Image 1 (tube, rainbow, N blue to C red):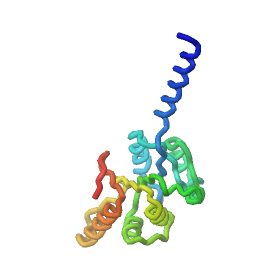
Image 2: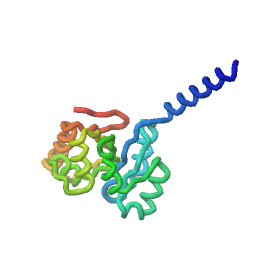
Image 3: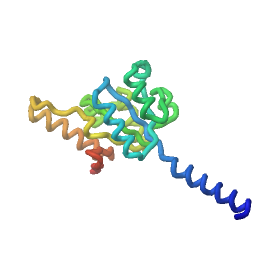
Image 4: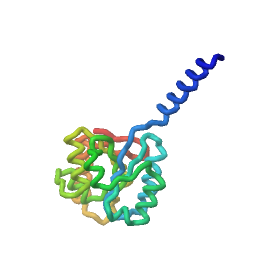
Length: 175
């Protein structure tokens, strides 16, 4: 094999390897207080190997060892909430691994008075993609009145109607 042919072969091989390693980024918005489910949810997302994960943390979460260690071990990069908004990261794919009922209701009703719901609003306005993990929703205890449960489930349905993907046990649900 000639030197030129070998160089061309190696150059092309390196280009192909670099293309394979490049995955789209997804922004993981850490919301609410710490949940023991969070590490497993992040690992589940990472295990799918679909995205390079970028953590979006509040200043308080950056100072919390639990959040910071999880983000450092599982994500390619960490951004503060302010950096993520400035860089308009909401135009890309955003994943909410944990989504509490208060955020669920506000997002469904279009109330954008928290960082998380403002992000969703901006994603809608700019064509960003939002994914939520069903196992990251607050589960019912069984003591809630039936009407309350129905209302919460109607909010989930509303989010799906907005185009938010809700992933259930490695399956995506789309309305």
